[in-house]
Image (cartoon, rainbow, N blue to C red; front, top):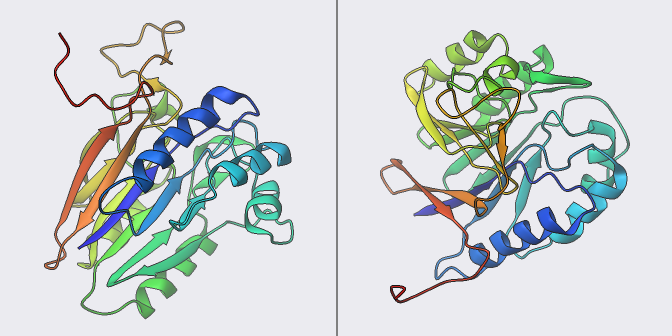
Length: 259
């Protein structure tokens, strides 16, 4: 069994609130009887892409569990690289792949510098084709990016989702090793299908964004009251995927029913 945790939209902003919520999530994950093999952070690591926000994130995300992060629309590629990755500054897409047991995880940078919506560049597609060409022929693959490539009935997110998603759909539909696509951006736990595969949208640790039946634009958009939450993806020996969404109560764990 492979266990992969997905955390998203942490929005480190130099304040204590969002950092404390991530701290609670990491304490939950590291305290599990069976700790995750890796943590995927699917974008919007910071709120404004500032180097000092990445420094806060790097300190908060220090854990024995490997953490693999990609940018979102609130991030800055150059600052992300220099502070989080220790690389030279560059505005090129931040794509990376990792082997976790039999599983290959390909993390795709869907951010567009200076824009809220997303797109995968030709450079990223070329990189992805290389990853898939070298991945084991009979082993599972997960794709992760920030922007959802499907309609989620969110009047905010649907306007700034992944553009030209049909190009990604062709890749996903034509590779039977791809077991699911993981995204963030929506600030809401959501599941649907994309190119015949599960599309699993992770909740945000920072806040919850409502859907069509909840929002009253331009007000009552973001709810900061709910506890942070994570997605836990299990890939079993048959390469089947099961996902659990788990909230992490900031007040701690209660083992008996309340009076």
